[in-house]
Picture: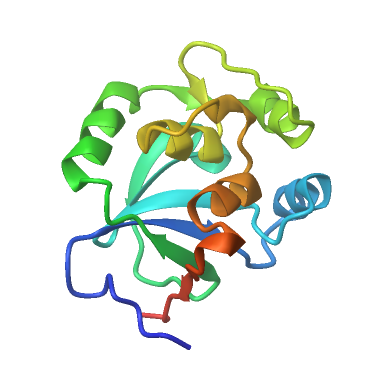
Length: 155
């Protein structure tokens, strides 16, 4: 296991959830064929995303990342993530968008986001409504690039 390079510096990374989770996590993995069911943007110890359990765009401090893989985003500035969060923090969760993204059909209602859609938009990816957690992982960590994610420690 590679040590977590984000543990001491304020850096930006995408983190991808690969833990067992609940029925929704399993359904997302089944529909998308990916080991990942959720993603967030990590800035230091604070994670930003849109989460169904929190009913939309949220920020939360995470102390452990035992079931997460992370991909550093050296070209994304923390201020840009915070600015996007401030612009969208009152927005709700995009339930229909989750299903639409699983079937590669984008659905982008105003003021609603699913996790991968929010993260993709925050980093400036094209067509964020069509992106799933696994698709976002492939976008930022393509096999041909030689880049590999690091597995975060339980710190």
